[in-house]
Length: 242
Image (tube, rainbow, N blue to C red; front, side):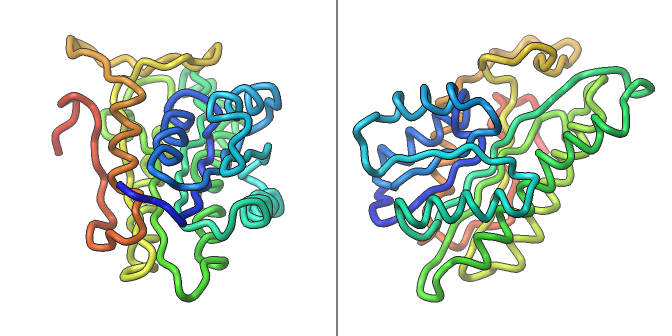
């Protein structure tokens, strides 16, 4: 795939799947801006992995649940690399805990980052995309939205909502901005404390790799391929077959 001339904004692009996606997009020729949530050292490490001297790579720390911060992230990408034409939404915040003990604060925090954030970034792309350009949006879903697991009601709600948001955005942008949702299965990643993998009973299938997901995201990242849109694609080794 040749993505020369495109600028990608990868939310959650500082580690794991997001970083692998950013690397794949850059390898395909796109200029890449990665967005991290709060950890400046992780952002710097990710930028080093992508190429410290590569002027087609940049990054920024931004709270994507904040409207003004989303605007600043797009400002940074545009000023440094050019108008964003590829948007990948992969923010991750997955605190676990029993449903009865889930606080409203935790509920709102998860939905703000994992659903409201993608809404704001998608809307910003729509508002800023030059009239003579096309764009592609790839939202990173979650297997537990399709095979629910205990102790993650807020995550399930957010990821389920992301599927609906993807369809809504696809309709709004039909013919010019396409949107698809990629759903990773059990992928080998480095998890933060308190955010383990979902557990599915009687599951003996092998885990996938971040490369499996990144290659699939790349396949849906070209703004020129406008005919496949509004779809949810599972990268789960057969754990979910709709």
